[in-house]
Image (cartoon, rainbow, N blue to C red):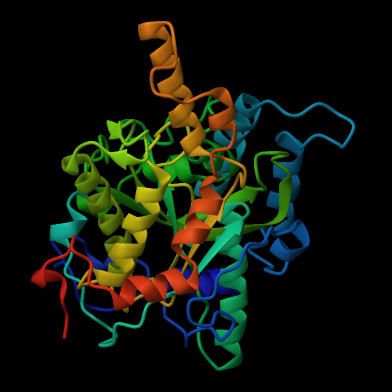
Amino acid sequence: MNMAQESLTRPISEGGLDDQILPTTTRTQNIKSANSASLPMYQLATTSHSQSVYDCYSGFSPSPSIATSYRRTSIMAPGPKSSRVKPSEIAADTKRNFIPLVNANYAELFPPYSFLYRQPTTQLEISRRNLGTRPPAFRVEAGDPVMTAITYAAADSQASEAMGGSRVRIPFVCAANERRPGGDWETGCSGYEEKLCRRSNLSATLSSPWPSTQTTSNYPIPSTGGILSDAVVVCRGPHDHYEKLEQWHDLPVVSVPPTRWPKLKENGTMYSFAEERGMMREKIRGALRICLYNNYDRVIIGDFGLGNSCRNPPQEVAEIWRDVLLFDPDLRGQFTYVIFAFEDPTQSTTRFIWDEMARKGRKGTGATSTGLSKGTASNAPSDLTIFQAVFEPSEIERVLSAPDPRYGLDMITC
């Protein structure tokens, strides 16, 4: 039995929701290993993974006949001198060939289903596995989030198995379309969820609630809800080439719709309304609670709520993640590490916000009434740079040593 088989056939431990809400037969378990020694307290890194690093995890090898059949029928990634394959063609190939292949041959190993948590912030009871409040190790990296999750899971699995433990699987928190599984993944849309659906069977899992739940659809996702697809199978590399992977990988994906285009103030650096900031905070809390409830104590996060499609203020988003992980009474001290992986290290949501403000100013008054110029927008910090500063070790120490007025007595744990 390979690592994927071992991980996906273990029963979930008892606890949490009762069987009527989430039967234990419809969930898989991530057995936690000892904390990884490779990530010391507050460690911060900015790295860019190469394909050779991704290859350190052998993944799951389809049988030779199935692999041969898939190669014959599906679109191959373009060569170095050829034009890029169209995203819509990759999507059609995934829908026509890869998803049916997984469903027909590996559904028992990789159940192509998902579970909707409608209100994870109130629905899920989180039992503290660790009585301490030690913060997780934080890392901020440049790289593909899914490949980052696969790479770290491989390293942690190797360390765990060397000590007689089990394979480690690390979930990825994915910004989701709240109305349609995978959004417009079959067209050329460039959101990360769409890209991942072209590389995997994520769209199929999102579309298929666990049969035993008697739910016909997981959509629309409630405003603070989230979907766990516990066994998403990845068959292609990042979207720059969509190259076929010789061996497939599986990982859990937590799909949560972020707040989109909130009202902003202070030159686009802050939420105008506490309600919208609070909603974003509840979405983040819900995603993390889904992870912990399913026994995942480490997590990979992409540019959740950032980019031109969402335009949340990146400084505030980073601080929400930080403060929830440091101070939330159910979450603090429960994660081993948290990694923020930015697919595009140059992306600047601040620039998108400032450009839009300048455009509206010119349209309304014939001049840039906001005081922002093209030169100012071009100097906007990248999202990665902002997250680096927020999660810098000395900044974490400062926040921990100073009471935060945004939190009351209900945030204090003994």
